[in-house]
Picture (cartoon, rainbow, N blue to C red):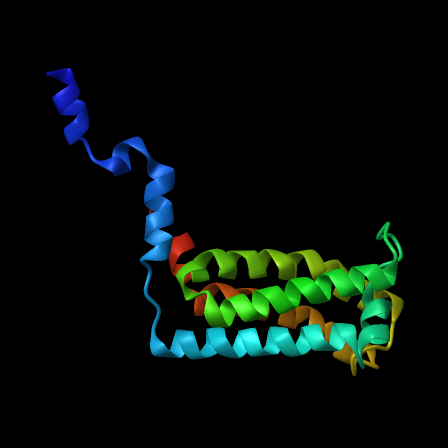
Length: 161
């Protein structure tokens, strides 16, 4: 009899991780959110292309000196990550919440490069004044929120548990 009672209990009660994952997969976003998610994906692909081509040296200038890797390797690896995330934002809509959280984390991880660019006065990527570099610092939270909002991750994270 105990088995029957246990079997009737919801999956949510016994496996909250599976339930949260299913909520992520079943989340819906508005047409506006989808438009901005795809737009962000296109921006990420364009930024990735810059890592591999005409902006490569500018991106190297943003890698802080304390990073214990070759600056060119950091630029290539971050470009690969940006390309994969950009394509995933456009085509892997089933995982949009996970992708939004992942991109937000990526933006947090590259933020020290933006801070280093400001503190060191490094001219790169069209930011050739302290004012431009400072404004760029305040744009990073906008990118983080954009990634979270456009994928529905912000709503998912703010839901009461």
